Length: 134
Image 1 (cartoon, rainbow, N blue to C red):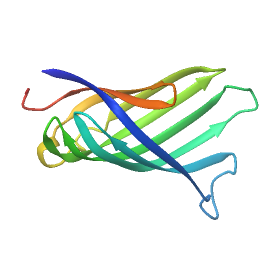
Image 2: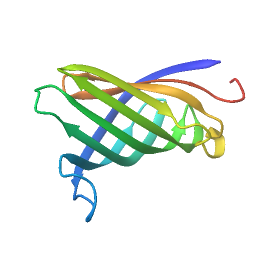
Image 3: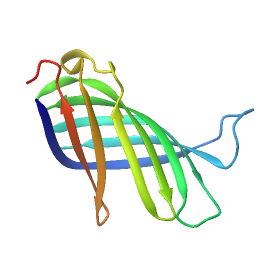
Image 4: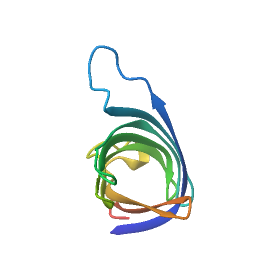
């Protein structure tokens, strides 16, 4: 059975120094620190790589995030992968649970997440399936 939940989250992005000896200065690196609330009561920790172009409103980012806590009362952790593009202000975002990344009561979790903003507040919309069908 596919479940759908929504809730607020807080996020802090902290710029990180480029790794010495490789990479390109046009690619920024940030640490991700999130606190999810609601049916997903968890923290998210990860890293983001992002770049902007000379064209206003065009950019891209990728990120990996480890989410740890409870999902609908089940404890464990899982990883999500972000891929986002801004094409002259038009956003496209894909956030997917990394297959087989779930632990403990979240082992076998699959799903996708969307992020939305209302004013300055952030919200997640998470569509997922537990492997036992519950």
